[in-house]
Image (cartoon, rainbow, N blue to C red):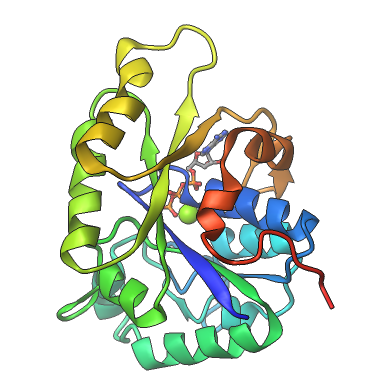
Length: 245
Ligand SMILES: Nc1ncnc2c1ncn2[C@@H]1O[C@H](COP(=O)(O)OP(=O)(O)OP(=O)(O)O)[C@@H](O)[C@H]1O
Ligand SMILES: [Mg+2]
């Protein structure tokens, strides 16, 4: 049985990589063969033809994956929306190549965690957005959102964009919540957003001490994710624990 999840966010820098890595480690502990993918990455570094994505490298470290060319098939140097970076670098985001890599990855893993780029309406090429890729990959979504003031608007916009395009929403995760001295917005937002959208709230992640993507430091991300996020709801009907055989 093949399955997976697409991790999107209300914005860039909200914590998609952190959530995707946390989920990868928890599922790996449960015996899943977890594959990770950052289908399009911008802001990559290194030599031409060998560009490296920090996000992809961190996810691969979390899941102990072996296929960098499949996990991050489309890489650009400029830290821009993919279609803009592609234009500057005189290349295209090759969707057929991305989907081929995804299907190839599915042969080696039984659960694929895909991290999006920015949010759902980030353009990958003409008339093709991240939301289109989610559809073509046939994956349900998790939305990562900030917790404080502004989260209602951003989260509802993202939910709306998903619903309009017929995407399945497994739930919302709030990232970097305060553990003491909650702001009033942080305290009230989850219920308000759930009531307005009907989308399950899967939990919230606090600041994880010692976490550093650039230097592959995970801190206690796995333990905190396990404790605070409802992983079973992310899995839906997929068996909640499988062996690696
Ligand atoms: N819960 C957390 N605890 C500690 N640091 C965090 C946490 N969430 C995010 N960060 C840090 O904030 C930054 C942004 O997080 P992250 O890279 O996961 O966002 P993103 O949504 O994947 O961004 P992008 O759109 O660039 O892919 C990173 O440096 C990450 O280490
Ligand atoms: Mg990221």
